Length: 237
Ligand SMILES: C[S@@+](CC[C@H](N)C(=O)[O-])C[C@H]1O[C@@H](n2cnc3c(N)ncnc32)[C@H](O)[C@@H]1O
Image (cartoon, rainbow, N blue to C red; front, top):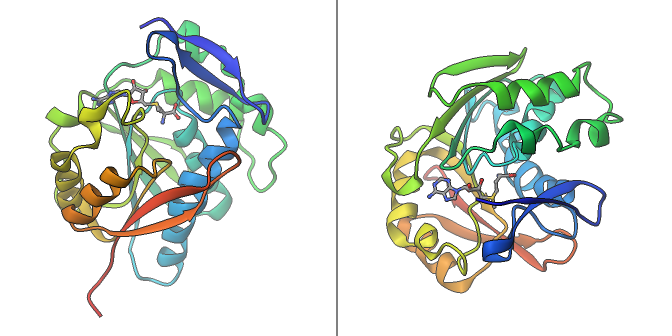
């Protein structure tokens, strides 16, 4: 897969896949999008549930490791909050070092206060880790398990994840990744409570998410996007 590195409007890089005319992130800002869609809409509410003793630990599942940006931001958040996160990321087509070594997220994020991480070393470590399905401690509060495979063919543990980042390419590019069986699988893999979050706001996808058993809630999107979508699984009251 031939990929180009491009700069987005918030100064952070993304990858462009010319064959499909598709980007890995919003061209309005890769970090801005990841912070709004995944960290603010899903991870931080899970942190709040943890603080209120509604969940005993936080297990995150990410569909699409890609550039590692969501993983990297989640690691930083876990360290800032001092909350343990067990993160599992699935990727069908891992990036070669000659691509990820050029992604300067660590340089851009280095001013963020509230942690004492060596960000460049952390970013390299999360990419250098094998796709072996084993959990590896990357920092005091963050453990990562990377798996390689297609989401359609991957078995996931039952009732496991409190947070799901659904970061597939768009339905126009990969319609097979937005079909009912995928969300039925994710529903089985979700713990109670769980927040699934994605940048996608397409109508048919939202109906598929609802039909799989998630309560669909629209949230305001990042720059350039009116809405994003969350799917909630909540305890019975
Ligand atoms: C929109 S990109 C986002 C990646 C990542 N979250 C990031 O921030 O860079 C979608 C990712 O899904 C991966 N992917 C595509 N089809 C897949 C499949 N069937 N199963 C698992 N991963 C897939 C792609 O290789 C790509 O890395």
